[in-house]
Length: 506
Image (cartoon, rainbow, N blue to C red; front, side, top):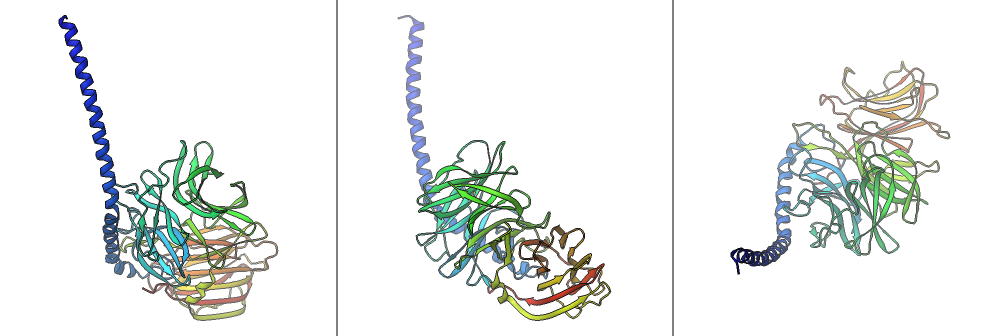
């Protein structure tokens, strides 16, 4: 045997031996990784409990300072302190309404996405409950507990949410009346996207239909547009991708809501701009939308990412996120809107009214009827003051150029926030934002339902359009209220005003 052959032979033997060793090493590493994964899963509940305690302690520490802001709203849902964004998982269970929301427990900026929690027995008065979910370090949701929903699965409250990063779908359950939550050990229940070329994969909205669970996820399909992706499941744990429920405008849709209303279905999407809804037909698990319309008419306004529920009496109730708000000095940012009851109108639009339960918050009442209001009239509301008010006005416009209210008015009239209707431009203004609005055939007056809550305004016009805006006054003594007409007189059929009380009972 020559030397060259011997060297080559020994090299082959060494390579085979090394390969064999590498294979064994791979198996050992694989086994170690699986063991570490199992150990991490076992540690998750304890780690989650520790992280929840830290998050709740951070909120408790900031709460007094947040509540000391004289312009922080008092009858809108919010965190006890720090950041809030999307409403999540509104649901009724065991005699209580539950609202969850995106929450940063550690500051007034976006980050550390967790699920805050508030509870009510009547949709009017609420209590803060401990934070429900927060990220587990090193896990499938280490980048945040993003938006989702809550359903009742054979008596078990079940949260369905997006964990990040990457975006995966997860569940958590409660067995103590929704006070504490356990993340499913088999999470994520949807570990990957169903196809390439998707823009986003988040914000599950789930409903029960014909013995199965269905889910839509917010996404976008390259070259096609925003999309709501449809899945089905027998048990909320094993999911099958079906197809897009609907594809449409924009690059990506967030926070899709899909629900029946009357003999139609409604799809609501948040396309990184003005929230849109469409009323349409649902057949063979596909949705054909009618005309897309804005959920909130305030152009460039703070309304975004709404979420809804079916109340025990069958009403469809929706809340939205009011972006921003507050100032750096105080540790809070953002609010949720008042609960809006959605109905199906004969003209193909949604009806939108504040939930009737809000009347429980009313205090002192001022009543006016049959006011002839001309541009030269004295202010009929000179004796009314306040920064937490509900106003219902029914106004015959006639040939007036415009009519409105000045809220949060200083004594000299130099500071004010205006809610007004321009009868020439056919625009309604609420604070810093405005949008198109006009009286429809068959409507005999302008009906404005205005909620002023310190630095936040919500306006409902003729029971079918809503406008949301921030309006932080420059000083605490801006409490005046006035009403005016421009161009020609108007007749105010009825004007009802209430001072409003806080929603919080703890």
